[in-house]
Amino acid sequence: MNWRVLGLGTAVLWMVTVGVIVALFVQGHTRPGADGRTEILLAPAERDLILAEMRQLLKSVHGVVTVLGSPDQHLKAAEAAARSAGMAMAADVNPAVMLKLPLPFKQMGMSIHKDMDHLADGIAQGESSVQILNRLSSMTSRCTTCHDMYRFATTK
Ligand code: HEC
Image (cartoon, rainbow, N blue to C red; front, side, top):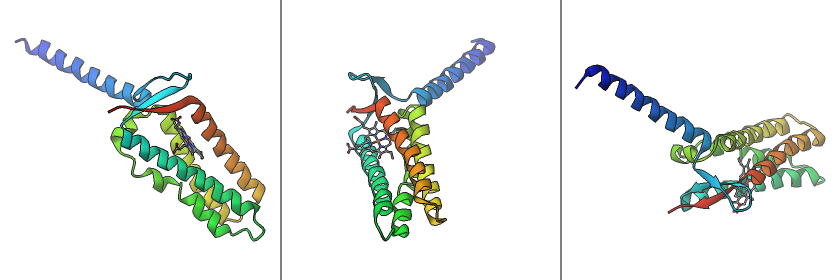
Protein backbone atom coordinates (compact mmCIF):
# COMPACT_ATOMS: atom_id res chain seq x y z
CA MET A 1 0.00 0.00 0.00
CA ASN A 2 1.31 3.43 -0.98
CA TRP A 3 1.28 5.65 2.14
CA ARG A 4 0.61 8.76 0.13
CA VAL A 5 -2.54 7.21 -1.35
CA LEU A 6 -3.63 6.09 2.13
CA GLY A 7 -3.03 9.60 3.49
CA LEU A 8 -4.99 11.14 0.65
CA GLY A 9 -7.80 8.61 1.15
CA THR A 10 -7.95 9.48 4.86
CA ALA A 11 -8.06 13.20 4.08
CA VAL A 12 -10.87 12.72 1.55
CA LEU A 13 -12.85 10.55 3.99
CA TRP A 14 -12.37 13.17 6.68
CA MET A 15 -13.62 15.94 4.37
CA VAL A 16 -16.64 13.87 3.35
CA THR A 17 -17.49 13.23 7.02
CA VAL A 18 -17.17 16.91 7.90
CA GLY A 19 -19.22 17.78 4.81
CA VAL A 20 -22.01 15.40 5.82
CA ILE A 21 -22.09 16.79 9.37
CA VAL A 22 -22.20 20.39 8.09
CA ALA A 23 -24.95 19.50 5.60
CA LEU A 24 -26.95 17.79 8.37
CA PHE A 25 -26.49 20.78 10.66
CA VAL A 26 -27.81 23.14 7.96
CA GLN A 27 -30.53 21.00 6.39
CA GLY A 28 -31.59 18.85 9.30
CA HIS A 29 -33.55 15.68 8.67
CA THR A 30 -36.24 16.96 6.32
CA ARG A 31 -38.38 16.22 3.26
CA PRO A 32 -41.00 18.22 1.31
CA GLY A 33 -44.40 18.06 3.06
CA ALA A 34 -47.74 17.50 1.26
CA ASP A 35 -48.99 21.02 2.15
CA GLY A 36 -45.94 22.87 0.78
CA ARG A 37 -44.17 23.16 4.13
CA THR A 38 -40.90 21.40 4.90
CA GLU A 39 -41.43 18.33 7.02
CA ILE A 40 -38.92 17.70 9.82
CA LEU A 41 -38.57 14.00 10.60
CA LEU A 42 -38.34 13.20 14.30
CA ALA A 43 -38.81 10.20 16.55
CA PRO A 44 -42.27 10.27 18.24
CA ALA A 45 -40.81 11.14 21.67
CA GLU A 46 -38.73 13.98 20.17
CA ARG A 47 -41.80 15.41 18.45
CA ASP A 48 -43.81 15.18 21.67
CA LEU A 49 -41.08 17.02 23.56
CA ILE A 50 -40.91 19.91 21.06
CA LEU A 51 -44.71 20.16 20.86
CA ALA A 52 -44.84 20.34 24.68
CA GLU A 53 -42.36 23.25 24.46
CA MET A 54 -44.61 24.88 21.85
CA ARG A 55 -47.62 24.70 24.14
CA GLN A 56 -45.47 26.23 26.87
CA LEU A 57 -44.55 29.09 24.50
CA LEU A 58 -48.23 29.79 23.89
CA LYS A 59 -48.89 29.71 27.65
CA SER A 60 -46.11 32.25 28.17
CA VAL A 61 -47.55 34.59 25.53
CA HIS A 62 -51.01 34.11 27.06
CA GLY A 63 -49.65 34.80 30.56
CA VAL A 64 -48.05 38.11 29.53
CA VAL A 65 -51.03 39.31 27.45
CA THR A 66 -53.47 38.46 30.27
CA VAL A 67 -51.49 40.50 32.81
CA LEU A 68 -51.24 43.45 30.39
CA GLY A 69 -55.01 43.48 30.00
CA SER A 70 -55.87 43.10 33.68
CA PRO A 71 -56.52 46.18 35.84
CA ASP A 72 -54.06 45.26 38.64
CA GLN A 73 -51.18 44.40 36.21
CA HIS A 74 -49.48 41.76 38.32
CA LEU A 75 -46.05 42.28 36.70
CA LYS A 76 -44.25 39.56 38.67
CA ALA A 77 -46.59 37.00 37.10
CA ALA A 78 -45.93 38.39 33.62
CA GLU A 79 -42.18 38.32 34.19
CA ALA A 80 -42.38 34.69 35.39
CA ALA A 81 -44.49 33.70 32.37
CA ALA A 82 -41.91 35.14 29.98
CA ARG A 83 -38.92 33.76 31.90
CA SER A 84 -40.35 30.23 31.84
CA ALA A 85 -39.85 30.19 28.04
CA GLY A 86 -36.36 31.77 28.17
CA MET A 87 -32.99 30.22 27.40
CA ALA A 88 -33.27 27.91 30.42
CA MET A 89 -35.98 26.07 28.50
CA ALA A 90 -33.66 25.50 25.52
CA ALA A 91 -30.72 24.31 27.62
CA ASP A 92 -31.71 20.66 27.76
CA VAL A 93 -32.26 20.06 24.04
CA ASN A 94 -30.62 16.79 23.01
CA PRO A 95 -27.76 17.28 20.45
CA ALA A 96 -29.16 14.44 18.27
CA VAL A 97 -32.43 16.38 17.95
CA MET A 98 -30.50 19.57 17.16
CA LEU A 99 -28.93 17.81 14.14
CA LYS A 100 -32.38 16.90 12.80
CA LEU A 101 -33.61 20.51 12.93
CA PRO A 102 -32.75 22.72 9.92
CA LEU A 103 -30.57 25.78 10.59
CA PRO A 104 -33.35 28.44 10.17
CA PHE A 105 -35.50 26.44 12.61
CA LYS A 106 -32.71 26.41 15.19
CA GLN A 107 -32.06 30.12 14.69
CA MET A 108 -35.72 31.15 15.01
CA GLY A 109 -36.24 28.84 17.98
CA MET A 110 -33.19 30.16 19.85
CA SER A 111 -34.08 33.78 19.08
CA ILE A 112 -37.52 33.23 20.63
CA HIS A 113 -36.00 31.86 23.84
CA LYS A 114 -33.51 34.74 23.98
CA ASP A 115 -36.27 37.31 23.40
CA MET A 116 -38.45 35.73 26.10
CA ASP A 117 -35.60 36.47 28.54
CA HIS A 118 -35.33 40.02 27.18
CA LEU A 119 -39.09 40.38 27.57
CA ALA A 120 -38.88 39.22 31.20
CA ASP A 121 -36.07 41.76 31.78
CA GLY A 122 -38.13 44.51 30.12
CA ILE A 123 -41.15 43.75 32.30
CA ALA A 124 -38.93 43.75 35.42
CA GLN A 125 -37.53 47.16 34.39
CA GLY A 126 -41.01 48.63 34.16
CA GLU A 127 -41.39 48.98 30.38
CA SER A 128 -44.75 50.32 29.18
CA SER A 129 -47.52 48.06 27.88
CA VAL A 130 -46.86 49.33 24.35
CA GLN A 131 -43.16 48.43 24.59
CA ILE A 132 -44.07 44.96 25.91
CA LEU A 133 -46.66 44.45 23.16
CA ASN A 134 -44.05 45.41 20.56
CA ARG A 135 -41.71 42.79 21.95
CA LEU A 136 -44.52 40.21 21.86
CA SER A 137 -45.43 41.13 18.30
CA SER A 138 -41.84 40.69 17.13
CA MET A 139 -41.96 37.20 18.66
CA THR A 140 -45.39 36.14 17.42
CA SER A 141 -44.34 37.13 13.90
CA ARG A 142 -41.58 34.50 14.22
CA CYS A 143 -44.11 31.93 15.59
CA THR A 144 -46.24 32.36 12.47
CA THR A 145 -43.27 32.48 10.07
CA CYS A 146 -41.91 29.22 11.40
CA HIS A 147 -45.35 27.57 11.42
CA ASP A 148 -45.76 28.54 7.77
CA MET A 149 -42.38 26.99 6.90
CA TYR A 150 -42.25 23.73 8.86
CA ARG A 151 -44.26 20.81 10.14
CA PHE A 152 -43.24 17.65 11.96
CA ALA A 153 -43.51 14.05 10.84
CA THR A 154 -42.48 11.00 12.81
CA THR A 155 -40.12 8.17 11.95
CA LYS A 156 -39.90 4.93 13.91
C1 HEC B 1 -38.56 27.45 14.97
C2 HEC B 1 -39.90 27.18 14.51
C3 HEC B 1 -41.05 27.50 15.40
C4 HEC B 1 -41.21 28.63 16.17
C5 HEC B 1 -40.29 29.84 16.30
C6 HEC B 1 -42.45 28.45 16.86
N1 HEC B 1 -43.02 27.26 16.52
FE1 HEC B 1 -44.71 26.50 17.28
N2 HEC B 1 -44.55 24.84 16.11
C7 HEC B 1 -43.55 24.64 15.19
C8 HEC B 1 -43.84 23.42 14.45
C9 HEC B 1 -42.97 22.85 13.33
C10 HEC B 1 -45.02 22.88 14.97
C11 HEC B 1 -45.73 21.61 14.52
C12 HEC B 1 -46.60 21.97 13.32
C13 HEC B 1 -47.12 20.76 12.60
O1 HEC B 1 -46.52 19.67 12.70
O2 HEC B 1 -48.13 20.92 11.86
C14 HEC B 1 -45.45 23.80 16.02
C15 HEC B 1 -46.57 23.63 16.79
C16 HEC B 1 -47.01 24.53 17.73
C17 HEC B 1 -48.18 24.33 18.57
C18 HEC B 1 -49.06 23.09 18.61
C19 HEC B 1 -48.61 22.19 19.74
C20 HEC B 1 -49.25 20.82 19.75
O3 HEC B 1 -49.30 20.21 20.83
O4 HEC B 1 -49.71 20.36 18.69
C21 HEC B 1 -48.32 25.45 19.33
C22 HEC B 1 -49.41 25.74 20.37
C23 HEC B 1 -47.24 26.35 18.99
N3 HEC B 1 -46.45 25.75 18.02
C24 HEC B 1 -47.05 27.60 19.55
C25 HEC B 1 -46.00 28.45 19.23
C26 HEC B 1 -45.85 29.81 19.75
C27 HEC B 1 -46.84 30.50 20.65
C28 HEC B 1 -44.70 30.29 19.22
C29 HEC B 1 -44.07 31.64 19.41
C30 HEC B 1 -43.97 32.22 20.72
C31 HEC B 1 -44.14 29.24 18.40
N4 HEC B 1 -44.95 28.15 18.42
C32 HEC B 1 -42.95 29.38 17.73
C33 HEC B 1 -42.46 25.45 14.97
C34 HEC B 1 -42.21 26.66 15.60
